[in-house]
Image 1 (cartoon, rainbow, N blue to C red):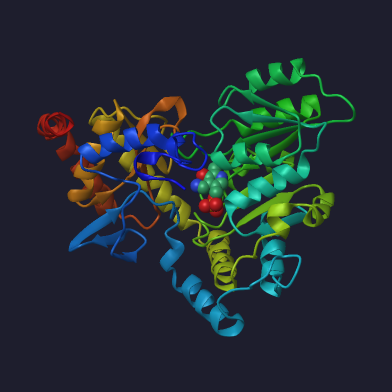
Image 2 (tube, helix red, strand yellow; image 1 turned 30 degrees about the vertical axis):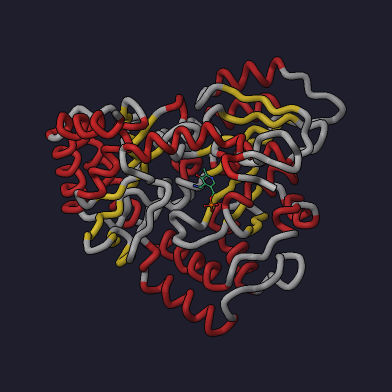
Length: 421
Ligand code: PMP
């Protein structure tokens, strides 16, 4: 098999199976030179929703998706512990075999009721949710329309689906979707399935869902909205951006995750079409993977109760997001969107973004380094996410580190040039 230097003796091609990743190696070596591998870091401890530890350094967490800070909520922790005591650590089976417990079904009923939809299906992760529901919905004659900035799991949903055609429309542009729906021939009884997100996870910009719903209604297209980053965070009762824009009832399929405001692991898709239930018998990522563990389901159930009964969590996160956004804007940072719980600071290139990311971490603030291909417009970003658990002082501390970053930029850049030489 593969010999030294990436060659392959048996196939005689001279290249190993890993040779296609040579460009990746090349790119990683730039980050190596600046002394950072942001994709291979480990926290030695996590002490709460906004605090971690690396070595003996305490870190403010400002790059999680713990929007409501509920991972340490007393009720959620008790519910998870109790679930383990009553039902054990895992289901060891899929939803269609031995992996459906009364708690999975109760959570489905409660999410459906919260969203005002007759059907809701719970999946093992949010990623799997989009894969399963999109592939289950779109058959060979259907056409899927996706936003140009769609998340990886929406793109992968189009890959798993048997539809022949996928059309991309301009990001957050209902007029562009309108034109594409008009031009696209959909024949042989096929339908259009339009997939958008509520809050986009990289730039933190918000979709005009109500306008998209109007376009879809006019064309008889089905609208699928992924509110992974906005469920629990937006809307008077936490039902997301669709609720905030007054069009929740127009959404045909509403997907979300447990890994953000619901402080757990899992996903769900709710629908205004009762026939959605039929898909339980065809969705491969629902049928052929183990169901979410009891502790995850019960923690999500407790977090859902918090979403319904503690509107102050949404008030906190909105206030902290506004505070952070205003502070960074005042310092002159290039921000990708108006204030939201995701605040992306645009940097000029990957090496600089990586140096700055590392510098902030050493100064005790963890943000996300987000680089292509995971970002829109090939941007290099320091992505900050705000939590309802952040205090006003936490946000001031984050702001003071960004100010120091600015004040030390000549020195940081000098160091970067030395390392890259
Ligand atoms: N949808 C969007 C828009 C996401 O950003 C993510 C993950 N960040 C997911 C779905 C997948 O969620 P999960 O972590 O539950 O797999």
